[in-house]
Length: 296
Figure 1: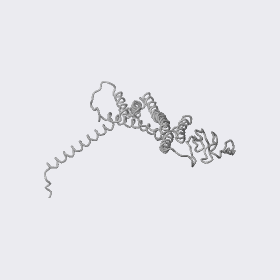
Figure 2 (figure 1 turned 45 degrees about the vertical axis):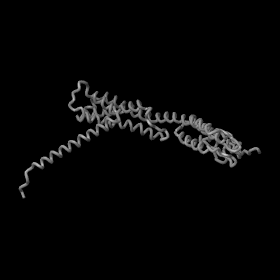
Figure 3 (figure 1 turned 180 degrees about the horizontal axis):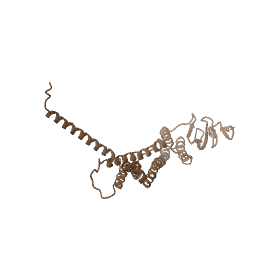
Figure 4 (figure 1 turned 90 degrees about the horizontal axis):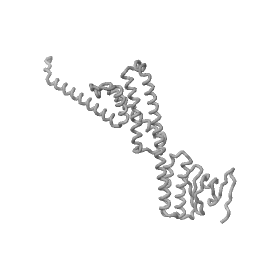
C-alpha cells in the first residue's frame, strides 16, 4: 500500500486517501472537516464532522453485513432526534456513540453489539429531551406567572385608589384573574411527570404551550370572577368570611382545574336553553288560549 499524499490547505490537511484521514483533516470526497475520527480502515471510514454530524463512506470492496441497513436506519433516526441539543459539549459524545455503533457494524461486529450502543444513546436522548422540554416550558410559564403575582401585589397595595377608579366589581374581577396563573402553575408543576413534551418540536412551540396554559388560567379565573360577582354561581349564599378572599380562592382553583370552566359553561348553556324553551312553551300556551280575531 502506497503512502497517502497530503495537500496543504491553510492550517488544515486535505487527505487524498480515506485511510490516512485524522482529526483536523478535510475529507476530500465529502468535503467535511473531521472533528473526531472514530474508525479508519482500508474499506471504510467513520467520523464525526466539525458540525457534529455523523459521516461515513465505504469503498466498492467493502461487504456490508446483512443487519447494516437496520443499524444505519436506527442511527439516522437517533441523529435526527438529537437535534434539539444546542450545547456542543453534550451533543458531541452522543454523536460519537452513534458513529461508534456504525463503525462496529461496518467492522463486522454483531447486530446486538451495535444496537446496544444505540439503545444507550436512546436512553440519554430521552433524559435530555425531558430536561430541555421542561426547561423551555416552565421558564415561559413561571415568567408570566411571576409578572401576574407582581401585578397582584401591586394592585393590592394600591387597592383603594384603584377601586375608586375602576369600581369594586371590576377591581375584584381583575384581582381574581391575576390569581388564575397561580392555580395554573400549581397544576402544571404537580403533574409535570405526566406532561407529554418533545424538545424536538422546538423552543418556540414549548414556550407557547407554557404561555397558553397560564393564559387559560387567566381567562378561566376571570370568568369565575364575573360569574361570582353577577350571582350566576353561589348567588344568595351567606358566607361568614371575606367575600373577596372567597373570590380569590375560587379564581385560583379555576386556574388549576382544566375541567371546571368547561363544565360550568356547559351548565350555563343548559340553563339558558331550558329558560328559552320554557319561555317558548309559555308563549305557545298563550297563543292557544287567545280569542279569535273578529276584524275579518
